[in-house]
Image 1 (cartoon, rainbow, N blue to C red):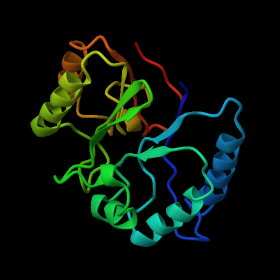
Image 2: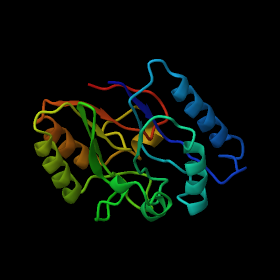
Image 3: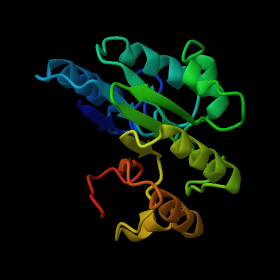
Image 4: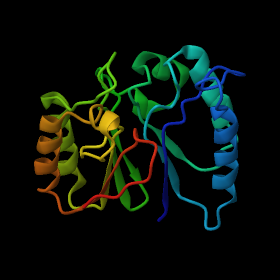
Amino acid sequence: MLLAQISDLHIKRPGALAYRRVDTAAHFARCVAALNALNPRPDVVVMTGDLVDQGEPQQYEHLKTLLAPLQIPYFLLVGNHDDRAALRAAFPDRAELHGGDEFVHYAADVGPLRLIALDSMVPGQSAGTLCDARLSWLAAQLDAASGKPTVVALHHPPFACGIGHMDALRLDPLAADKLAALIARYPNVERVICGHVHRPMFVR
């Protein structure tokens, strides 16, 4: 199967530009068209956070409009620019976003793959973390995967990328160490995918 990852859309209100110069909505519209045109087409699209720029309800409504032409199933994650309540309010029909606790995390089967979406957001902060409650939830989900090929997705990278100002805003190093130790117990985890740094990077 094919999984497409996109990240850090930073959608603003209609007509607004990021940093007064970047039309993120226009770029995302082209991205949706490119995804639809892929052959073979991906089985699923995973969007690893910073879906909008300030977590505003109007921005999520704009995101919904831009997502409407996407012809591929998709999953949404939260990043530090997102707002959990506003995201849930904008997507009431997305059951996976309404899991019943404060965090927007969930697990879903995508063909032969198990996707586990982690919430690494700390409201009001740019850096992220995984508290003990979230790590315990992840352990339970990995146990339930029963050897099935699994991808774990979160917004904040659990490694230093070498970009100083971004490394100050990464996943909390203690949480990253705990995550690494947990993932190491499950050889069926094929990948851990992240967003946040706006660049393609690969780490073993």
